[in-house]
Amino acid sequence: MPRPLSSSAFTATSPSGNTTMNSPADATPDKPALVFLRGLIRSRFHWGTFPRRFDKDFQVIEPELPGNGYLYRDTTPGSIPAMMEAVRAQVRTTTTAPVIIIAVSMGAMIATEWARRYPQEIRQLHLVNTSLANLSLPWQRMKALSFLRLISTTGSRLRLEQTILKLTMSRPLGMAEKELWLDFAEAHPLRWRNIFVQLIASSGYQGPREAPVENIVMYNASGDQLVKPGCTMAIARQWKKPLITHPDAGHDLPMDDPQWLEEKIRGNFLRDLLKD
Image 1 (cartoon, rainbow, N blue to C red):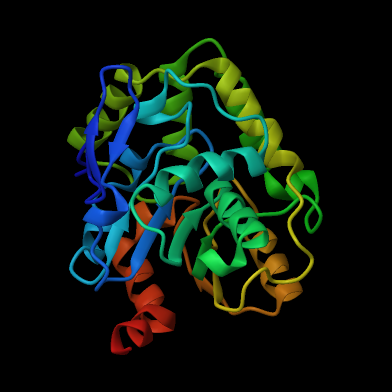
Image 2 (image 1 turned 135 degrees about the vertical axis):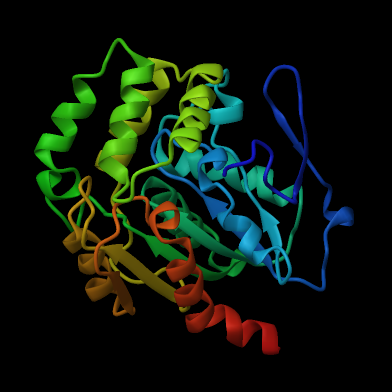
């Protein structure tokens, strides 16, 4: 079950909703830094316990995009590059070392932009269920029916959250878990301005034509109801990077099958890093 403050790198949340983080001096240099980036109108809360699977071997860092979750009072930056700078600034208060990033959907766009602008700061990218405007068509990047279902919820944040849960997960949430997520949404209400800024920024984001760094693995899920799995495949082909496909999980792969994703990530690069 998700825990509200799940990052080992975060220490407190201020009354205004701003999150404070450990300074670089407090970091654990013996462990590689592992950053988790969530997607469109998602909070670090929505990782659930997935990051805890890596606590033993990594310095886990879970930044929050301004405008989402614990930072819901803040204003979301107007572009993917600006969002990247906001997230990067949070991470850099914790570590100045090169980082490994696990990122979903729009979070993967932010991670891609980070690697494009600052390749020396990226050790590895693990990108899940994402897309780029210059490699896939709009109706592939967000299925038309799913888009209409999201738009139809305008006016009710609770309906929006319920719709997101239905669209992004293949496995049903238990009653207690679902109530926890809906309670979180009610306690951290998204601003419609921030929602539309994120939709527009992600829909128009064009990534690099060549892989921004060497160590990248792509992951998609055959049961994704939000984004066609072929979008992630298109990036993997363009960049000439490996693609691993889950046979039936949905868009929120870390919640649908966390054990599978952890095993695949460790099996690709993380296991080798720990031997260094």
